[in-house]
Amino acid sequence: MDQLAVLAVDPAAWVALITLIAMELVLGIDNLIFISILTNKLPEQDRARARRIGIGLALFLRLALLGTVSWMVQLTTPIFHAFGHGFSWRDLILLAGGLFLVWKATKEIHHHVDPDPNPDMFEAKVTQTFAAVIGQILLLDMVFSIDSIITAVGMTEHVPIMFIAVIVTVALMMLAADPLANFINKNPTIVMLALGFLLIIGTTLIAEAFGAHVPKGYIYAAMAFSAGIEALNMFARRAKKKKAGG
Image (cartoon, rainbow, N blue to C red; front, top):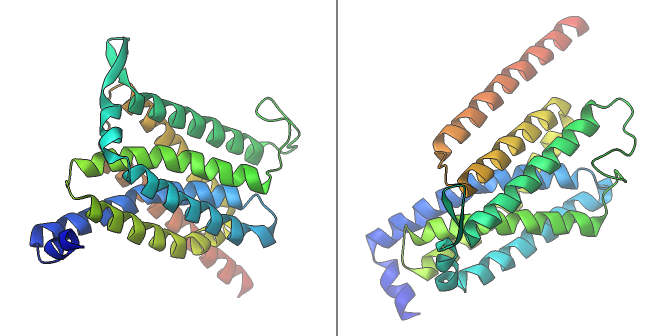
């Protein structure tokens, strides 16, 4: 409590908190897109509950990881070398998460473009169970959490600030999850764009695992540009419908 009181009157602490919240929100966009696509495959009556449970459990996961922050920092220590690069546990986690995202996005794109979505090489059964969706949400959130927490350690040494930033960010994600998922569900072309985003994010995680740093600003700028073009296409389609109806 004394530490929180000191931080409350420290301008640098407030700057660090605001910066961390902004960073977590930007990184949270990836998670929300993934959660929206996953939960929209469930029966409509289960979607909102799956999002709340998935994001709620993700909060506890992140807080638990923050409790082991000193151990997590050690995850950046190389444990073996290959291809001229020292791989740490963080690299291996990013690699696994990136491969999973690329596989998942590719599988979903395949099912969207296949006019006859029968069982295929990607999956024997296309339907998703409630538990499977929650498990996949937690799996990807762990990957994103470890990366963001290690980044946060380099921004501030105050663990209480990290806790507050995570709680605020997850609360905002909870509020944005349903509107974003409903928007994606109502606009089929957005689904393909979102899956393209997941492919980019997965590829970036794989590159990071091999030591190739990709500035996040470039990734999010490309995503924002693509989203802007799609927004113009949506406005154009609406204008054509109004003209045809008139």
